[in-house]
Image 1 (cartoon, rainbow, N blue to C red):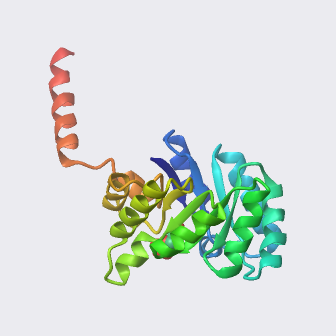
Image 2: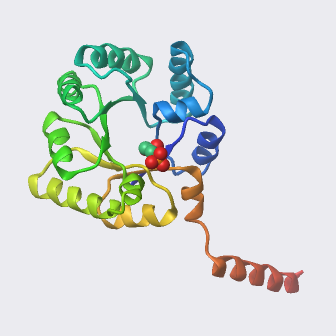
Length: 217
Ligand code: G3P
């Protein structure tokens, strides 16, 4: 399973990248706004900076909701760097735009996915990645991990090539469950990635080893 970081915060991207396990970055307009990046030029510049920091797929989201607008925006985004993946919402014109970019060989990430039906449509259109929002499904008292498992099953049975990019990850257990259930990629906040490190027995064991090592000195 590939690891992406789900943020537009450069310090967090740097920290995750320095771990040596980062395969890419996803962003969205809310994450950009959180970093105070709003003007169009600033957004484009920020994507370029991220592409220069991380050698992997970088999702950049369109904000148009009509086919022509998404195509125009997506082409500008794709021109920033070869690693840009155009992120497109799961709406009718979004499906058309995904098909358009797939025929042009430009990678896409279909976002805001909450059902297996939507996952089938995106795969048929040729999406490179599909982003089901695990945490937001959980927020509705449904099971986000069940959704990952269902899409995983459908894609395997049908031989779809679209990669499942589990998004809206909120904790380390989500990452483990996504791995168990066949997600190809997990895009996570830094805190969830670092949370995977934690085990009290590791800390206790290391403290003991270091204590015993003093005996050699
Ligand atoms: O990858 C999508 C993600 O940024 C949404 O996360 O926590 O706002 O549901 P969240």
